[in-house]
Length: 315
Image 1 (tube, helix red, strand yellow):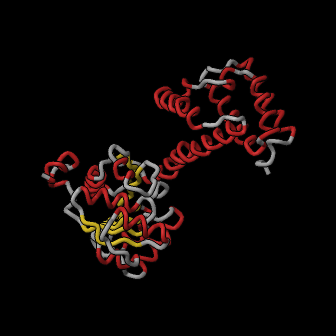
Image 2: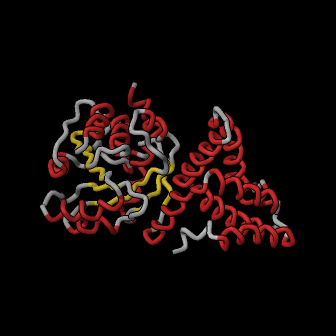
C-alpha cells in the first residue's frame, strides 16, 4: 500500500508535519520538483505561480492539474509555501508579500536559497509565518529526473530551534538528508558550493572547447573517465589527489601550455593562470611540490602576468 511505501521516508508521527497543502511561488527548476517530491510523501500541491512560458510548462509537467495563480493567491491557498525565486529577488518578494497582508499566521514559509538563512524571512515572521531555509545541494534540470535525484540529496538547513524537527521531517520526506547550517555561515557555505559546482561546469566546458580546437572529435568521451576519476580522488583524498605538471613542478610544460593558449585560445589564459597559481600554492602547502621546483614554476606563471596577458582582470 502507499502508506507502507512511504514509511521509510517518515519520522515518528509526533515529529512529522501534518499532510499540508503546498504552494510554489516561482516555477523555476527547483520549486516544482520539490513540490512533486512532497506530493509523493502525501502532501497536496494546490497552487503555483510562474511568469515565463518555460515556467508554466515546467509546472504543467511536474504538477499536472495544479492551477497557475498569482503569488498572493498561492499564499491564500497553501499551508506550506515554497519561495523558489533567484537569491537576489528573495528579499523584495518576502517584503512585498508581508506588506500586502498575503502572509498568514502559522503558515510555513520555506525558501530554497543557498545564500540566505532565515533572516531574509523576518518580514514574514513578524506577520506570524514560520520560517525555514531548505537548500537542496543539487543542480536541477527542470524535469522529472530531479525528483528522483532528490533521493539522498543533502539539504543545507537553517531553522529556528522550535522548527528544527519540522524542517528535518520535510527534508526526509523529500528523500533528502538535512545538514544544519548556522545563519552566519550561509554565505560561506554557498560560496563553497558555487566554487565547486558552478566553476566546475565552466572548467569542463572550456576543456572540451580546447580539445575540439586540438582536433578531438568527442571531447566528452575523452574527459569523462578522467574527470570522473579526478572527482572521486579529490572527494576521497583532497589535495593529496593533485597530479599534473603544476603539482610536479614541470615549469617547461606549463610554459608550453601558456604559449599554446596565448596563440590559440587567449580567452582561456586568465583562468588557466589563476587555477595554476592556486594549485601551486596548495601543492606547496601540502608538501607535494618541492620548493626548488616551485620557484621556477612560479617564475613562469609570473612572467606571463608581467608580459601583459594576465593583467586584464587586475584593473
